[in-house]
Image 1 (spheres, one colour):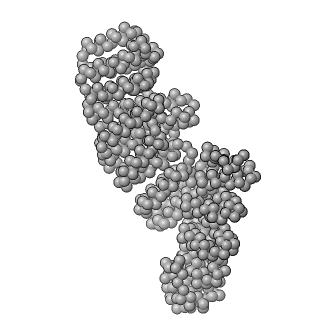
Image 2 (tube, helix red, strand yellow):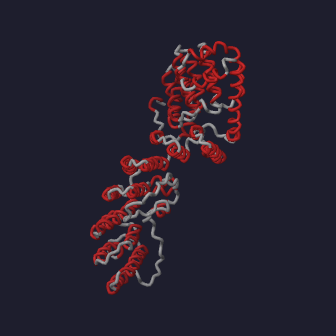
Image 3 (cartoon, helix red, strand yellow):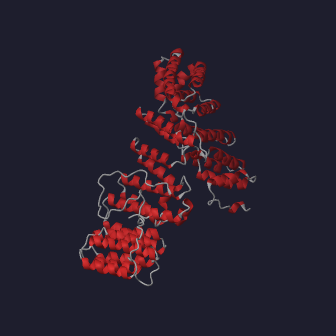
Length: 581
């Protein structure tokens, strides 16, 4: 196999993992690991494997890039931070003699995960690093900041800090005023105040340390039960298939709710990001984080960064998940009042990601209605989409679009000739579609008009389907179409003689010869999740845009024959439930 020409994009994540296990050639393994880590940057084991291969090959920049890319996806992944700082100590500090690079990584880790309950390992390694450089003032600040961060290994921390103070207090008294490490500019004033409070007395200062430790222990004790309820802390591709782990998400939410109730929003933010490590593949979890960042933190830019990441790195291989990401992004921008951005996203979804997809077509039209967008936008969009659906021979998307294009046109222009021309074109393209004819009859019932052409032109279409010798419909289908049309005509037309003439034509054609034609349900043009588009609606007031816009079921695939075949064995049953007016 030519490892340089491997195309792995078509393999699922499970297939990639299975194949990688069987490979002995590191060059080939690196290709598979690259693909696995690109898709699942939370997968700590594979991040470590890939960085190790690059390091062994002497490509330290690429190894570093593996770590930074994974942490860019989620900077709360403390396992990857620990591996990264150890790697830097070995390869930057010891191997490369670049202590500033290692210092930079320690500071990044301290800033991102210093308040993580399990961060003591990183703090302790940071102390060891500064001991090698004989920076006692910095070590003092590291211990003090870790203590204030309320890490869970509080007893070990206090034991080491007390020993350090006991040995170096006299020197620290001078250093605390003479040295000003820039990286601790926020923490130093507080530590200095504690030295002043102690009157430079070691015993008094140690009492202050113990006082801070007691406060930290109280906070740790409050959170221990919550931490103890969390078993899913790392990513595995099978996490969402494990019902017990999926149920455990409620434990995370209870923990987060406690922090939010006490207005500890930064701690809540850390918990959300920690939760997204084991539940990286859960789009609802990502949505909850976005909602929190927007609503509690007011960090709209952060929300946009998350959406940008999810668009570039879809967390699922299925089309539903990708569409949900883009639709959620469009709804978010709509809530921010960024209508042009939201419109661009909707157009991208409809034109590139899912053309002829009934769900996304409906979403765009409803978007324009909610924001009171120009009706011309809707009509142009529907006409363009209908033309594409006809060219693609997508029957059910074309039916949906035909009906709704006509509804919007009639609500705007009251032009019967135009709507019958549109229906006639669609019927010519789908001559054997009983569903199209039945929905045509249903559509007639929505028209409030007494013009004679309503009856004459509508019968022209029905006549070709039922009485024309070139009609390809089975007799039973002709009878159903005729029965539905005659029922509409009887309830709508006031000219009894005209009704009798049409009925007689059907009788002469053998379509009403006493046979009790079963009344099949007319296939609907939308599922329950896709309500009919309201042609007369101009605004939905202040109605909130729902955060969850896509149903994760087969009904989302009305315009996608391939996906329908994958998700339902009975394609016809699937199609019938998808088309709704």
